[in-house]
Image (tube, rainbow, N blue to C red; front, side, top):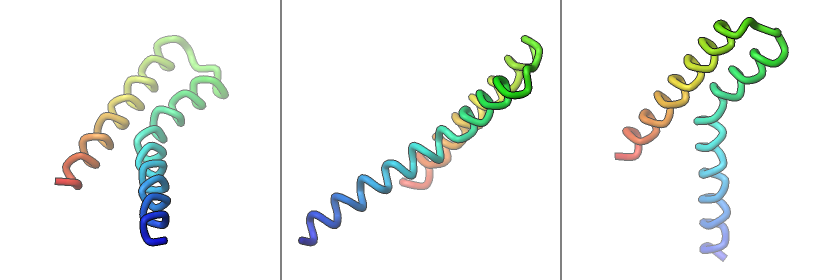
Length: 65
């Protein structure tokens, strides 16, 4: 029973990490869609969201070391 619970917790942890990493890019995509931004503003928002996603991915990698 312990192995099953451990595997379920591993899956939940992986889902949590994916959600933490993808949140900034998802917010940037929603802003671009709902607020009808100009092309250049939409690109800037997406770049900032991508950089935030990259930062979160690097931060999670450092925490695990």
